Image 1 (cartoon, helix red, strand yellow):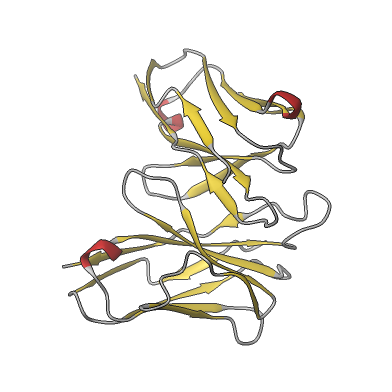
Image 2 (image 1 turned 135 degrees about the vertical axis):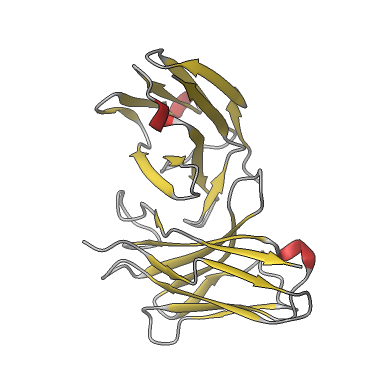
Length: 109
Length: 118
């Protein structure tokens, strides 16, 4: 089955710093989603990005489908950015998502 | 637009008891998913519905878990009898469709139900 690896597994940042999170996947996909799981457990949609680049405020994402990776950029990080960031791709032949292992981000003031 | 609703938010039971979770998807979304998230891991699919039919239940432990979506709208997930290893967050998600041209398959998640089995 499909494999999804995220790096780094843990990241600690000073408030105001920038960061890049990476998601590698093993098969070609027609969908990729980035989520932020906040400390209360809610999964918040960040990007639906099967290919190309999108930006939303301080966050942006790029997916290079031909090379099977996606990057999530966080600029000028804030304490509210803390939590776990997941990328997820659909299983072959289905639309249900297979999640990566996540990156736990801690932003300290 | 209202998001995915789930209840209860928290549940504590003893092993061998039964429990049920409820989910109401985003209005108009044909596809509904139940995921299980164990502490420290990413969510894993339990079952996927398209309207009131099951699309994928290959990872559902059918000896103790069951789910239904009788009218193609809200859904119930049941565990009977519960085991200690069922302690997890149960997440419901929905998408406009289960396939087709993006973004029809973008998934949106509810707040989850945190289950503790003692």
